[in-house]
Image 1 (spheres, rainbow, N blue to C red):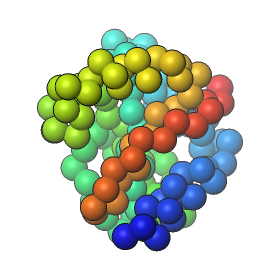
Image 2 (image 1 turned 60 degrees about the vertical axis):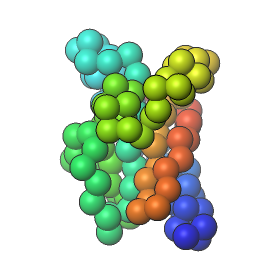
Image 3 (image 1 turned 90 degrees about the horizontal axis):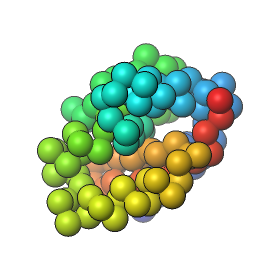
Length: 117
């Protein structure tokens, strides 16, 4: 299990700049259209299917990407009510970064990476 988490983290951290730009555009669209001030990119292995967010038609050799929001993650119990304010503060303190939720079949981890515009 730990190996899968490490591989997912390495895959996310190795995303190239062009892909980061596209993912940043997706998060900006969520903000500009007033859908949410807290867009979150879901990243997971192509071998697993998760029903969270909207699938992004962006190719990566091993990852699939979806766009979601803090609000959706709260409704689906991936962020607990007691943690919302703490998460918002963390998110806002990293405003210049993209927020990823890395998912495996047994774990979830938030990762913040520099955004490229």
